[in-house]
Length: 281
Image 1 (cartoon, rainbow, N blue to C red):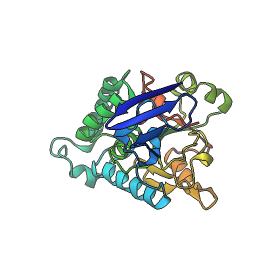
Image 2 (cartoon, rainbow, N blue to C red):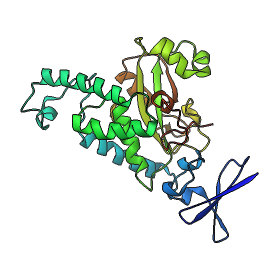
Image 3 (cartoon, rainbow, N blue to C red):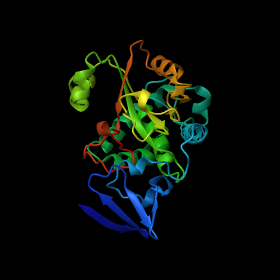
Image 4 (cartoon, rainbow, N blue to C red):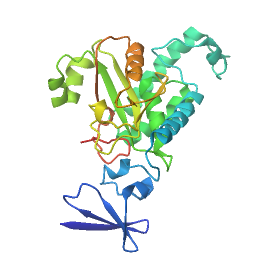
């Protein structure tokens, strides 16, 4: 069965069992990785994460990751679970009205407000609300930092394929976890002392499995503004353990980390068409 739809001057033709959507323009088939994000059909999840006009090279992915890292850092966000730097605090508009201790209480209140405002929304609305509120509040834990970095990448028409990834510590039964991560989270993680973290992987291989860093690709890069990490996933032919060790240090754990797609955890509508929600295969 073949379906066809015209979008922005392109004629998209998709075969039901085709693994990759092809684009026909003036009778010429064009690879998806040359098509801008806005012109890729929303029902083609994988196509939305191909490299939009770039070669997906490590140097380019590092550059893009660093640009998004700098963008988030320039927002001067403060975390509810990290100490506040006094010099950075003095640069904000809140310094005249709050002591640092009072500002910490304000951040916690803002955090509760933001969580309530985003609850039950689609991931796209989650991102939109976060982008509207977090910078003005100067509040951002790992989730807000990663969301804002992902948004910056999504708006960059030359951006590489990326995904929001969650890391958990102390997952004792990974088989049970991967059978239903959302249920496992609700039952055994949500109200526990298990450390959880969110970051972005830039330059993912098209066949990446988000639960397995070894499949993310040798061109992929860790983008983690909250953890102050911008590093290649690989070092030569092996996983670069520097970023894993730095992440574990930030999470104050010695246990191995368990990774999965973060998007379903914040998307009450299960919107699989979102630009931020790539499942991987």
